[in-house]
Image (cartoon, rainbow, N blue to C red; front, side, top):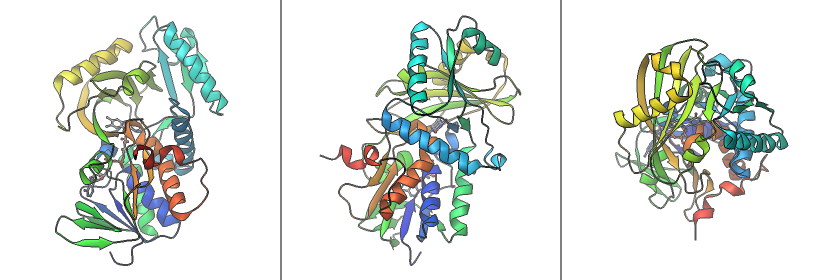
Length: 368
Ligand SMILES: Cc1cc2nc3c(=O)[nH]c(=O)nc-3n(C[C@H](O)[C@H](O)[C@H](O)COP(=O)(O)OP(=O)(O)OC[C@H]3O[C@@H](n4cnc5c(N)ncnc54)[C@H](O)[C@@H]3O)c2cc1C
């Protein structure tokens, strides 16, 4: 690992995307991963590529990143197990339909194509939904990938440009360097911390907190649902800063399987599947699609999202440590936002102008 310009800690989707973007700019990159590339939250996530609009910064980052995903999957979408299934935001009642209208206005004003759905239009598209819903909002440009595969593709592309990888645990970060578990030290001009929910193990001062999530996957039932279905109530539960919650989030995998999400829990890093939480999540899902109860669930798992207090990631220089860059804190949107993160990070490092302003994501916003 000599003559390295940048050491990236972590080969999840964010580290892999950073390695790709930095090597594309001619930098000599080394990636240090303690486990399997893409085996962390990246393997646990649903892989939904979704434009989110809770605030202007989230909208800018997710919309930019979805456009980068479209370029990446390009003409070989099957390599990423990509599907352009779109998202339907499901409105349970008139209050949520109002939220759908507001969302439609925000997205349209930003140039994102979307369509409000009457109840009849909703059921024509998704007959498995329970009767009595108020309608929905279809966002056609959203899609999905199989994230560990995409992480591997990005990493392989970086390696073809000369990037190297090492399987080792980083135990400390120094000025322009890292220390590995066996005591070895490596130096580089830039260190990029992309260790997901474990970032705060290396840097306890980071405002990053693990948020546990459960997912289940069924056997193959092609056509059971056709779009990623998300309840509009999801937005309320997803952004709670404490407490446990579940939300209806159903995804049609290209294999015909149905991915069922999701739950959110603070104050635990225990990876065990918790039967009570799983049951709550599945029961809630069947209130939206009752026939789901007849499907065979094959496997359940959990993952840890890296949550920040304002829900936006940390992308940019560490406010106080030399040579250290942060690319972490992507919470439940890191598959979507990984590619834009990498562009903003690499752009800042190289002093380039970036497609969208990077200020809202700078780590210094939490530094007194
Ligand atoms: C249940 C669930 C559902 C989700 N669904 C979606 C979704 O549909 N769409 C979406 O956009 N996002 C989703 N997400 C969020 C998304 O999965 C994450 O934001 C994203 O994977 C974060 O990627 P990352 O590379 O930062 O972290 P990770 O994938 O966790 O990668 C970090 C890597 O760093 C390595 N590492 C950590 N510490 C060290 C160390 N000291 N030394 C060396 N290596 C180290 C780890 O082994 C790991 O491989 C979901 C997350 C969960 C948990």
